Length: 242
Image 1 (cartoon, one colour):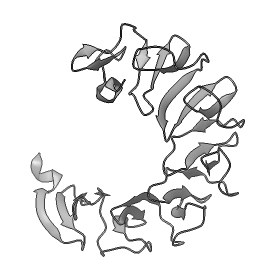
Image 2: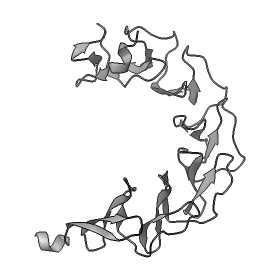
Image 3: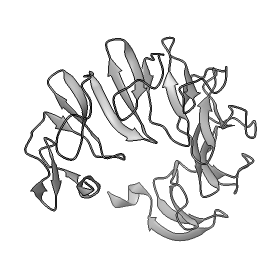
């Protein structure tokens, strides 16, 4: 049954719809979106599990929270802690964490009982020994990791530093560039962690087809190209708007 691919969460968030019609008769306290292999997280009272496109439980187990399947694995929480399961409800690994993310690029970020972040592989094994103050999802084999001093850098799929440059704040790479913030403000950096232009901004968005929306420190908004040149002005200073 492939109707789950067209299913959308109903406005009441109690069931799923396909072209405005209920996909099944059951109703829940909360549902989330379907993901491959055709399962959706649901919750009734204090129990949470996954259902198929008929609204039937995918397995007998129950959890405190369930989330969507990504790369065939779903994050769940129970009284013992957070971990991942596969489609039949079986545990992917025996370890428990204080929080788990979703699998991306065959890696998943987890937080241990000491509040430190790391990544596990497809089998739930730690990818590297280091632990970070914070770490994010991988995209194209690179993730952001925050050190003890609060500054962030990029790490590769094995946990090694990509360029060794550190920033006050940092994002993953998107189409070859990453949003980064140093002591002077926000900018874009290349794969070597080098700024691609000299200016700094109060805010920058990722590049979209070679251009990015940015906010200057006076509140003005504009669009810049990949060399930092202004393409168009979207708003003058905020002071002139009042």
